[in-house]
Image 1 (cartoon, rainbow, N blue to C red):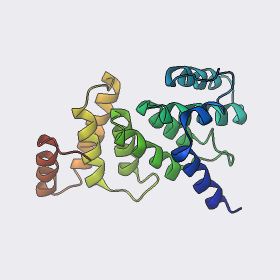
Image 2 (tube, helix red, strand yellow):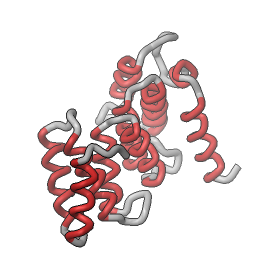
Image 3 (tube, helix red, strand yellow):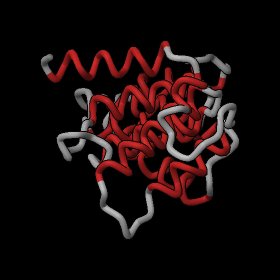
Length: 184
């Protein structure tokens, strides 16, 4: 099966499989484990001293299961894992897969999802660089509760960088849209 087809199949499994079925792929968890337990298992598997790709792939499965169980932040973490390449069979970063996980996190209300998506769009990771949508995503992240002070500072710097690439009318349109409480 071509790599694209395998990736598409894996993505569909993550979208369509019930959380319980995904949790089975998360080693050491009892049946009925919740999102917090799945995230805890993923953290345990991602010991910084370990570079075992099998453990990183297991952690990715735990994060996918936690997202399916309702934890929006797990999708952002899964995207970061894809961006690092640690969880990918090739061992190389997969920015397109990362961007899709960031989008899932953002759609579920995670400010970290919007932050990561904004940074990816600013840098052209997973999609062509797009300062307009990068600025919008970063501005949206800054307006949501839940970012750490470090994340807020990063989002503000990146939003300023993206905004500097836009025409005044574009910046005004983004501000009006975000101030009006418009959704995604």
